[in-house]
Image 1: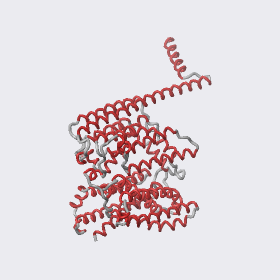
Image 2: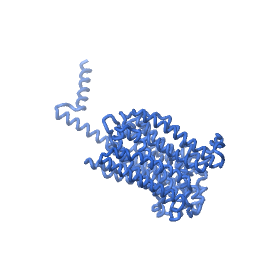
Image 3: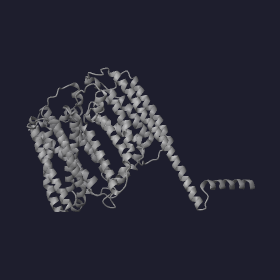
Image 4: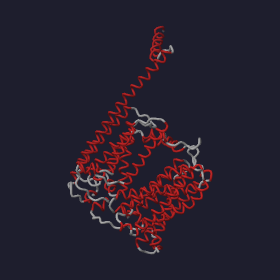
Length: 606
């Protein structure tokens, strides 16, 4: 009974999560807002109802899972002590605890503004993907690609299935307005589902015999359903062009049935172990999901590649948005500087090298390589991305509202850019604290060792370094508009402070007499660079050397920007004086001298 109830309850949990996300997608992108406000109270009420159902079904699945793992009757699993132990002491239980906390936060966020729905959507995506980090792929080869592809697959499926269901909750007139936008979302979601699904299958089914297993057969069923959905999506786009809306609405009902079946098949698939592959189990594989590589050499670091599927998918998404923005400007007849595009491409390439390239691969196994990857992520890549001016490109190309009352994505982006939160984070002191302060918070606490042992922790640590670097260099040398104007002298002071703090951090790492990794690198049992303390000291030296150069470049760039600003101000004053002279008026300096002469004359006469 439990063997049947487990996949069914998991499927129901995934379905309610997907539908909850679908409502949030509808509020965020499909329904019309009024100056950024959400007025469809019926849709908001349904959204909260489905989120509450998601919470209830998740709690029910946790109880079923406890019963299944302990091989005991379902009634005996209603034990708060056992459930608490499962949620706090097992890796999968912790993932479901994250999901439950995320759902509770969703219920607390008011959905009165469009910005609130965007934040809720982000939290919901984190909640639904949290358990995926502990899926079967985390203990086999191609760990990074398997987990990343599966997470992207779930997100894309949520946008596709959830978005379509959310569309059906709108009135007929609202559907007609929302259909073109949903069609665009569905197209890219479908492409992503197919590609990520293919990547997931490739990492787990590497032979004809594997495809003949139970896991392979279920995968084939899921692939067949996916092709049916892709065909339905093609019909949607064709009928939208023909404005044949009655046919579209009739197809949606059948399409939803196939989608719900696909979700349950996917949940069933997640409860089945993939066929075992002939992989030699090693401590490195068990801890990182990656086989221990050969000793690092220049060629191996430069040419090696171990795809981090989640980071790779994120980079592809960002690049696609950037390219689309440039294409939109080109079609308008506007020019976008080629240098900015090149700088952005170099920055993204550096991120890929530090996460999926040879440097990213070896960063899992040696502290020195990890610190080198950290410097690339936090110091080098952000400079290229900042010089690519992504915020300026977004402001010029993000879609406007579909009518005069609708804020749209661009309006909300501008609102967020000028918000108090944005002003707080773009304060140079705050940016400095995040940039350098987080170094001590990560490396001189048990946090570093704990983060390194999980794919999710490693991913979010890399993302944090990248975003912290982007914020820091955006405030100092960015060419994008910011909500506050920082004086150049303040920027220079912050840069000198950053250099000092970073040097102090590096020296602290080099001077440490104990390991900072909480035993992580020792667990790997690597056969090369066996002196872990020497490796750590080398990492500190690399951090010092690689960290100071980008900051010095930022100092030079700030100084040049200061000179350019002074030159532009002087040119502005000269132009004002020339205009005044042409009109027979005195310039500002002449008027001021005349004012002083009048004062002197008055004092003399007295």
